[in-house]
Length: 471
Length: 65
Image (cartoon, rainbow over all chains, first blue to last red):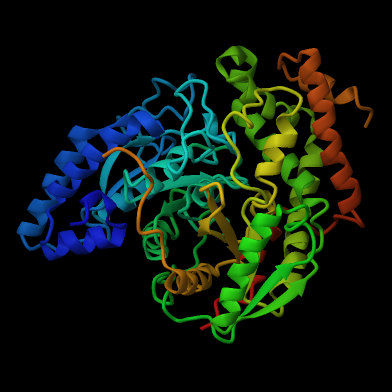
């Protein structure tokens, strides 16, 4: 019999709403699983067992009363510890905010609660969402469930680890340069950075308001699609949230890709790619061709400057948020985090504004090249096998930018462009670590990305056995 | 901009800047400066950051059925 914690999000919801499992049984199994795996993964900063059981009992009572049940009814979730909930400590993975208690609740948490999710705790993350590995000087390193000596990817480290480690059915992360997509792909699950502004950021800790995105990680394409549908949409509390209607992202999961076109970039994304990764991605493309899609090779403009422009925007904005603490208590940051935020102080206001003014023209040019004759853009997630924690533990040393820049090389440009990008699991390397790829679309094409992901998942299946962990 | 001016900009904002920080700032901002120099091919007159928001809504082919 399947362990309840091994069910996917949608399987869990189906089991609870059909009565084959109660929300309390699911919560008990989840908490037991978390207790067993937390010592290995360190994916949680805080576990809220009492709150989870209360929510589970309330969910069962609601069902017993015959009330209408939400699309996430009974599903255990936990989120990157940067989503504010009134009266609950939110650390942002830092020492500075170790005791911070907000008086507001993030819109996305309100939406998940209303949909029936059971909240089980707060997940580990890179300090202030600044780091693509898994290291955290204050809350301890988070570990990859498939091999704990390896990185989880970041900065939504706990989200990737806990979801892939089958401690929760899904999680919210955030993505400013790859921080949902990297932990998703590196831990072997799905993660989506939607179109810039698709999801409200009200009540979410900010890093760079022009580049920040809120989004889900989950084990299946359907799970990820459902979570996005629940959280997406306009929000009067966040005027940057797009007013465009929210699609039903699950509706095309089984539509297939026959007749659709995939753009594969000739420049930038596949440069210096590891041969093992290249072969794995070739096999993915061959699968799509066998399913009836066709491939277009495209040259993408501006990719020699997007990284630099993105750094101007992102660093300037994050430095602004951290200026007070950088001045008054810089020693409370991990050296790596403090170092990463230093560059922003050297840019001028005019340089920042120029980088912002250029954004629409650059994004339009790239969209034209990528999507005028294709439906999605295909790109690697990571150009090399998942590295170890030891290899990437560079602190604020001279290799900081080289090592971290190599990790988010394929994900970072997409935030400046504002396009949606979905990380899809594609098997494992010879060393047993996940390989992932990105499906990137024009603005508001999230349903299309899930269509492609669903087709691949149906053809290749998902890993049935989870990682070899206790519990 | 001269390389040593960048750390001074940071220092002028009240941020403690060590020699290592100064070197880091100079190196990182050099990348951004180079990107801007390459990306700027004409006037930015009649542009504004909000055009990007308009692109997200209007400058797309939209979802295909």
